[in-house]
Image (cartoon, rainbow, N blue to C red; front, top):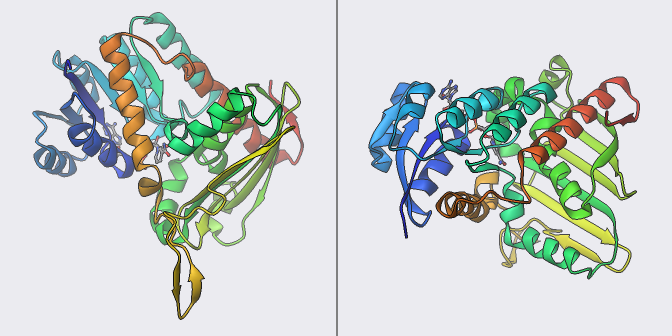
Length: 339
Ligand code: NAI
């Protein structure tokens, strides 16, 4: 198998996970370079993972002729500029969600990707690479549950990680953009239809910081697609038992549920507290295999010179736009059409 040489930018919470996967778990992949503006962190990760090149300056990594593809795991407001720089230097790009922090930025990303049809571009909607979600999609496509009527999807981070969540909140883009993008992507993916109108609601139940940010610490949205199918989303950051992501797809002929109890495994523990199941402690462990699978797919596309046909830059724009409209709807208290 031909080796594919990757450079990765951003070595924070998720960036470190992706870098470790690229270095150790992706078949035929060489982690050739890493980049982070935090120099001590950069040096430590480069040494730990035995990475030949380390850059504090992203533009310099883009000039490295050894690097074929770039994985972008930097703060969301940097994504579009880094996509542009990478592609203008002839690099294939994998970019974490969200595509951009506003719709004009997403349109700029579309234009860059359109200018470079010879390069792979993939977005980090890793749920699509999770075995259970992929199986649900296969069954929906096979017509097993008839016509999809409603997608209900919850994304709840654990209370145990609230400290880092609160630090991240001011530059996260808000709950709808940061958390609900995955659920909005699932609504579009499972219904096969574009989101047409949204009604975002929510409130501050515990953390005043969210009030200062004009955001909610618990948020929900109802959405409707062009084909009439509906979506109901809920998100918060204080789930008691760990990372909970559960999805229900209701069709005219049946229902599919992914992780209705978001337990880590089938083990039931019976002790002085009663009978219980352990949850995944955080999003990293919940999605570990999906993170590996999406980057395996990315390096595979580079090797075969193909672009993912069903996960495009336009999906990134559509989902981001729906998320912004949810935020606007939450702010004005009205149901809003997607423009
Ligand atoms: P983080 O804040 O933990 O890490 C960001 C890293 O980027 C830091 O190490 C920082 O020093 C570095 N950085 C900042 N500016 C830079 C620059 N100009 N050049 C180079 N490095 C720079 O952020 P986290 O949580 O790892 O998130 C990163 C991205 O991944 C975000 O866009 C986030 O939305 C996305 N993400 C996606 C998830 C998913 O479920 N797919 C889960 C978590 C994050």
